[in-house]
Image (spheres, rainbow, N blue to C red):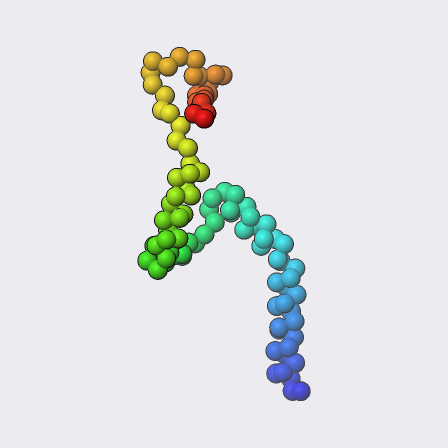
Length: 97
């Protein structure tokens, strides 16, 4: 092998070692971004756009799932008393079942 071949092999080995060494830190940063809600780049919504066009049943299923999971809380009215506890607004939702 000539010098260029050894240089390429050395660069690949060094790059691999650096990526293996930094993998835990990169994963921790990604998890932190997900928990903060700042994960995803400019292409984050492309998948849902493709679902809406090419798989409308998947889009409908996702919308139905979101509707089932989300439960709106009743809005407070000025006449409600006892809804503020220790300076915090408390909303109690009664189970209709």
